[in-house]
Amino acid sequence: MTALQSDAILARMMALHPKIIDLTLDRVWRLLDRLGNPQNDLPPVIHIAGTNGKGSTQAMIRAGLEAADKRVHAYTSPHLARFHERIRLAGDLISEDHLTAVLDECYAANGADPITYFEITTCAAFLAMARTPADFTLLEVGLGGRLDATNVIDTPALTIITPISIDHEQYLGDTLAKIATEKAGILKRRVPCIVGPQEDEAMAVIEATARRLDAPLIAHGQHWHAFEERGRLIYQDETGLCDLPLPNLPGAHQIENAGDALAALRHLHMGEVAHEAAVTRAFWPARMQRLKTGPLVEAAAGAELWLDGGHNPAAGQALARHLASLPAKPTHLICGMLNTKDIAGYLRPLAAQAESLTALSIPGETNTLPADQTAAAARAAGLAADTAESALAAVRAIVTKAPHARILICGSLYLAGGILRENG
Image (cartoon, rainbow, N blue to C red; front, side):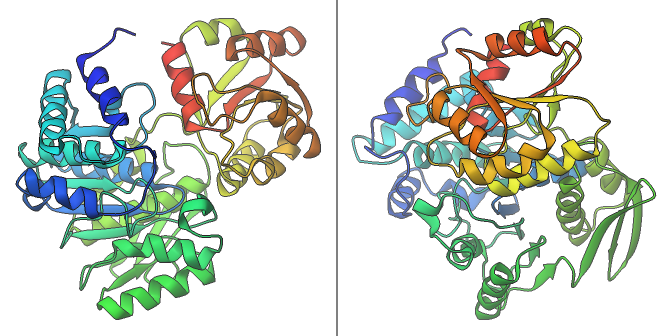
């Protein structure tokens, strides 16, 4: 991939703070003030937090709004192949020239003051979005919510909390209640919040926060329901029922994400065209994505090749349920994970759905779990396991033994991003 001017600026930004993650809003407020507080000039904001499903939910809402002829900004992280994926302006990915300009402006305004990479790039996204006309802004939380760099919008149009589970314990806390407290930090006084399916412990925290802020909840199981019936998605709330196609994003868990998106669209008074587009037109890469072209697919020959970036126990459970629903076929995993993740919890549900795992160290990632440790964790979970130097080597080794297998590359969005770059 050709080096870009924006890449050089982003590399300089990485050096502005010794930590990749340092949760506080002080540095963000300081820089936003120097930039003229662009966060106050954004089109109406829909702010999305949660452990799993944020990106898919955002993609479905965007598809629905755009089908209703709305111009939509969207901010998400991390990116997979190129940083530009994080910022979408009125429907289009930010251009290289525009990205370079706002990054330069933020870098100059910040000077040598400490600020994390995510914080300064979030400020750049706000700057670009505030200067581009649109009807809505979709903001996905980076980590947690309460102290996330996106949590600077005084009065969003709507907030959304997708399912909460254990992840990022070193930053958010080691219990579901502590993590839910951080996620519920995006709630704002009297601003409605769509709440996806939650464990009781998490829901109790969200409800307590909402009562304190007088924020109306539109909660799964209380105010809306979404489920599959006879090969259709049925959504029902207090205003009526929607009978829709199943989500085009694969996996039973996408029904819950679609429920979040439909609840949001109905709250915004979007009609049937938006509802159907949300479940039929959304695209979200590296979420059980079937790879169909490129050198890895050529190496796979007659085997199926899939890619998924889920990386925590809840994602492992969702992935295992989806694999179980597919036509029977020998399934082999190629897996690379970060050393901050619960690999045992992730692999435990997948072990029943796969015949083997080939472990990789994630190229270029200092926090990668070494391949031999991933393989050892797979054996402990009951999987036959080996290691490989690269995804290409792993694919070739698998198809030599099982030429018509289902191969799933999984375990980390950072691995998934590398695969998408490698596979062109």
